[in-house]
Amino acid sequence: MSELPLILAVDEDPVALERITGELQRYARDYRVVCGPSTGVALKQLEAMGERDAAVAIVLAARGTQDLKGEELLERVHDLHPHAKRALLIPWGGWADEETADAIRTAMALGYIDYYALKPWSTPDELFHRLVSELLHEWRRANAPGRREITVIADPWSPRGYELRNLLARNGVPHAFHTCDSDEGAQFLRGCGQEGADVPVVLLPDGNALVDPKPEDLAQHGTGMRTELDDHDAFDVVIVGAGPAGLAAAVYASSEGLRALVVERESIGGQAGSSTRIRNYLGFARGVSGAELAQRAYQQAWVFGTTFLLTRHVTGVRTEGAGHVVSISGETEVETRSVILAMGVAYRRLEIPALEGLEGAGVFYGSSPSEARQFTGASVFVVGGANAAGQAAVHLSRYAERVTILVRGQSLAATMSQYLLDEITGKENIDVRLSTEVVDAEGDGRLETLTLRDEDNETTEATDALFILIGAQPRTEWLPAEIERDARGFVTTGADFETTVPGVFAIGDVRAGSVKRVASAVGEGSVVIQRVHQYLESTTSLV
Image (cartoon, rainbow, N blue to C red):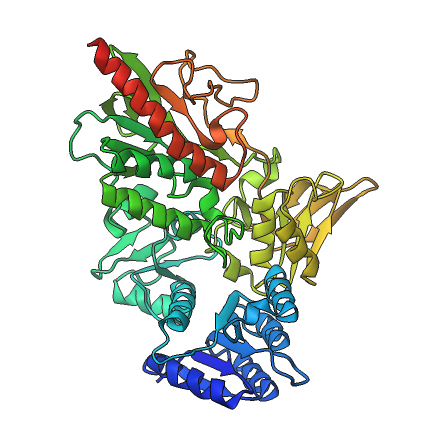
């Protein structure tokens, strides 16, 4: 029988330790619970578990008076067990102590803890359990051993395999991944009659297998996502894009009685869905992943009645009478009284021919949470100077031996939030190279080297992966000429978010002059529904 994942707690206060031990017994059926007073002993145990590659789910540590303080132990855990969740134990009111507050803020800024935990005060202490349960949920969602709801078996450098894993990860679908030449992967393939398959195979919850499926097939048969409309009745509003702006618009539209359809070409959350941790979004003190935030918004909109159509893209919009007709890939057309353009932007591509054939095989546009662990002990490069690039670099640094951020400009300060700059500065395995760009690449079936150019010379360096998160390229080429755009392709609007075509609105990153932040996009998505109501009332009054 395999060893249970570990929950470890350390506190030298005997009364507090007794309470913590008692409360953590709630998890003893599924986790090995170990509690003790010594940070030194705990460190030795964690080192031993690291040597045998045993799973550590949570480590809780109080500051204490020992030579190795609790926050220092948690810093070591960050290196020994990068998947483990970590929290600094403090007594009730401990946040008011200036030294403790500084320890919490510093450890969080540097990524050494996920949050602080209030020591249990009563039995049961559900406030304590709320944090522990959330940490376990996050850990198990990303690290649970064994088979998951969906299992993907593929070559780790297969572009199609990457496409499928990325679809599942960014849509919040629990899944496991095994390489086709691993013992687990071979066993799964034998079990479904696909032994020796050289294309991706996806095992579904019912035991059936999808062999080299297209994304829309996986979405429909493997996840239950809707990829076809059951009927073609008219909608009050069609929202193009399921990023933060589109999701907010969907929540407010459906909650206020509008019949809403959201069409998303890739994944719930849009570009923000690939962010591994957003720490400055209101209401999430511990931070939240873009995928988690997007899934919560998706569920909220769905409960209110929003219809979602995924892995499909809008190909055209035309005005007919008092309404509009939206054309959708798959030869589908729907009638709607109004349209909200919220398709966001795509990362700008590096115009380097050698990179084109390596996409998904070491070259990635954006950052998928599903790929980080693949590069454990590796050397990876991140191109970009905004928050998305910083978040990707910090996440990758938990696994990779060396992460190098490449920036064409002279500084990160003007384009990246301070909390990310602090975290990057505190990571010994993250380098930042300014005034540097990628000019070429090589690899046989996978990325192997990059040619870099700085102000002085060119160098060729070995690498395992390149993550590109640069620029903002709006997806507006399909729009009709009547909808005005600026020189860069962003949609121009008035103060009410309405475009040059009445009844068609634009919000979020695709709108010219918008603030490129998740919170701003959500704000625009909520406000625009008031404008939609006003437009619908005005058109009704004319009938």
